[in-house]
Image (cartoon, rainbow, N blue to C red; front, side, top):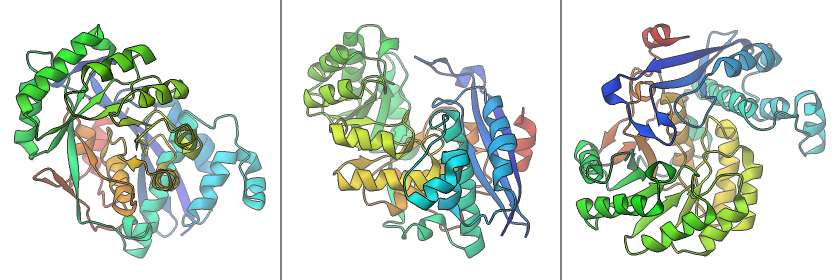
Length: 387
C-alpha cells in the first residue's frame, strides 16, 4: 500500500452561454477544479478534488503544481493508509515530526489558502484508497451511516424579481425538493431590492418550502441586520454568509440581532477557524467546503466541534463529483449533519466527471455503498477538459 505517484490535473470546463448565470462573482463561464490521482505500488488508484477558489471558476495552475511538485513527493514511498499522520505532516511541513511527537501543531506559513486546498484533495484521495483497500465505503470507516438517504436543497436562485419565483419553482419540479437556496446581496444593489426578490420567491413557493438566502459575504453588518429585520415575517430557513469571513465579530453581532439561523463556513479552513466561530457563538450552521477546509479528516473534526456546540452541519457542496461524494460520506457519519446542498447551476464536473452521478429522488440524495468515495472517473471527460 505504498504510494507510487501523486498526480494533479487542472480541469477547466467552459459553460455554454445559454447556461451561464450572473452573480456578484460576475458571469460564471466555466467550472474548474484540480483532480488528484494517487496510485499505490499495488495498483490501487484514489482520487480527490481541490480548488483554487470557493466559487466554481478559477485558475488552478499554481494549486496543481503545488500538489505534484511540493506536497506529493513527500508522500511517495509512504503507506497511504496512515491518513492522520500524512495530514499532520503536510500541514506542519518540516516540523511535522514535532507535531506528531508533542501533540500540537507547528503549522507552516501556508496554513490557509491553496496549501490547505491541496491537502484537502490529497486527503480525499487517501480516504478513497483506504475504502477501496477494505472494500468499504468511506462512511463505514467513519463510523457508519445514520440514514440511507438524506434531504437535499436545490442551490441556485439568481433570477431577478420578476423571474425568481418561476426559477425556484422549476427546481422543485425537477427534483421534488422541499427547500431551495437563492442568492442575494451586493449584486442586487440596495438591501430593499434583495428583500423584494425574497418576497417574490415566498409568494411563488407558498409557506411549505424552505428558503435559504446566501449573501456571499457581501453585506456590511448594518446591511445584514437591515435585511434580517425586513424579511423577519418571511420564515427564512437560514441566512448564509451575511458578512465577510474576515469579520467574525460582525457575524456574531448579526446573529445576536435576529432569530433567523445564521450559516457560514465555505470560506473557512481547518478546525481552528470553526472553533473560533463556535467560541463566538456566531453561527447556527457550519458549511465547510471539503475541497478547501482540509478534506474529510478535518471535516470530521469540524463536525465534532459543531455537534459539541449544538451547531448543525450542512457542507458547502458547490463543486465536483469527488467533493460532493466526500461531503456525503461526512454527512452520513456525522450526527450534526442535516441537509445536502444540490447544485442546480450548469455543473458538468458534478454530473459528467463521474460515470455515475448523484442519485436524487423526491428531494432526497442516496448515500451510496460503493467502496471508497464511490466515484468512478470518466477519463474521456478528463482528457477533453484537462488544461
